[in-house]
Length: 461
Image 1: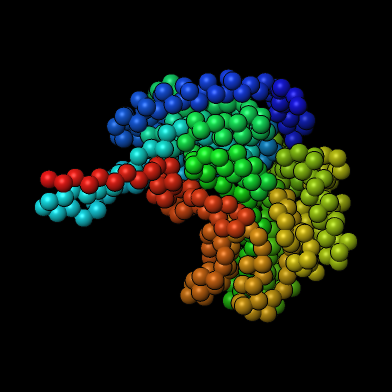
Image 2: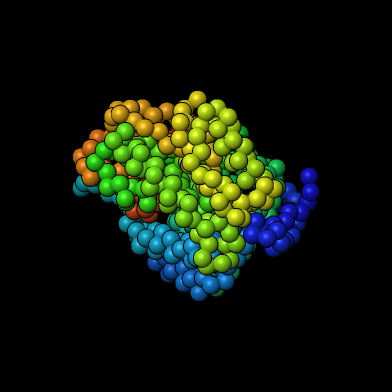
């Protein structure tokens, strides 16, 4: 294995950076420094921690122009859309800062004249965050900032494809006045990461990535008793009921499937449409997809950029072609997208019909700008198909009947139920999944609970 890695831009193949991996001994030194820093940091008053967090957010936003282009070059999202990630970053960060005093406050457990009882949230210690490349600022901030505000120290290993994001975090925390070593970044191999997790010196791991990656993290932690949070992706469904606002449903589903070139764990990959709306939905979706412009994401008129690597594009094409071989019908002509080219990360979008759940295309995560559509006769059929998956991150219901959405949502095996929207993370709510979409919680007050441990106080007078 190489001792270095390169960040190769999917936009034009340029090398953005080349860096060495830390060896295991040096990585362990980072943990030692992190533990020493955390002992002091947890004594810092919460109000002061929050003030540093607020300055951190402002420091990030001050770099927004540079970050947007840098983000596009690293992972290919159109420059017209890249600034939105920093806006979402600020929304999540500010919400978690705002609720910290309440989420981390002592909880009265029923005191009386003789006994004072309360629960306290204590920081875990050293939190190891392993972040994915597809929404590199949003994914990292979900765990990094709440962990630090809660009194932990954090070591961040960002995906190699978006390692420059970790540098921006470090710059912003330094400018905000965060004490040395409370936040650190490491460039390490998978093997070194596994060694760190299994060393007994890490107190909590937050990982976002593939199911296979989640299994590797769980194995590495198996000989310890540390907490592990895993966000592992999905094959998220949408159901368009007979009473849905068709125009809105089509626009939302297509955007939820194609935004970020489909590279979203909660992107729409399976669509079930009531038979009364099926043909209309397909016709409108095809027209909308054909209007997308695939091209250089640095051009502001582009709204569909490349996927992250040529290898990823090849895998997506292979899954689509396999489905076609098994009987699926493609509705989009790839040749109508001028920049679509084999051997490159530039990939035309696709919609498939005549699909079924025997096809890997409808069962395995695609992570690309394509989705399948099936006709259904009833809510019951839609629910059965939506649940027929080993993933369970989000599910979307398009309807004008909120009561129906609640009843359907109650029967869905998923972490989040949406009505008339999709592909959205609301910091007010817990971000969580079931089945192979992982375990654990980010955001909301429960996100703070995950990054702290309960300590009980029983004080007899």
